[in-house]
Image (cartoon, rainbow, N blue to C red; front, side):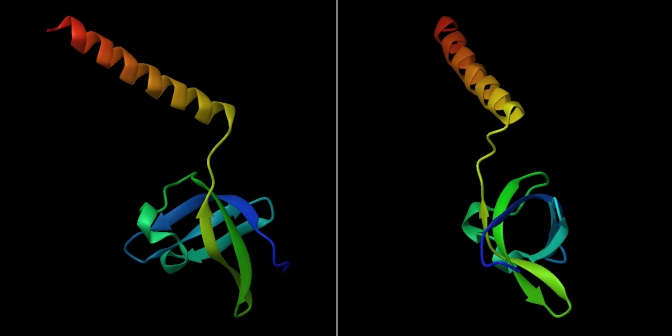
Length: 97
């Protein structure tokens, strides 16, 4: 495969086994937790990632996995909603004093 980053979403991850699959347009790609950025926590379902693909025996494996900010309309709406909720909570706490 090409030595360029591909993108996909975490399709499933089993923390007990330490591996999962990334869904892409070309099919699912296996990944091991050791190839995921550990400092940022465990992968979550539908989280967007970019990665390189290498041969793993007769199959393929994702390596150098990096999280990608979700810029979809749904993600933006959720982000705005969370932000608005925090502002409202802060404003209401001023009235309770």
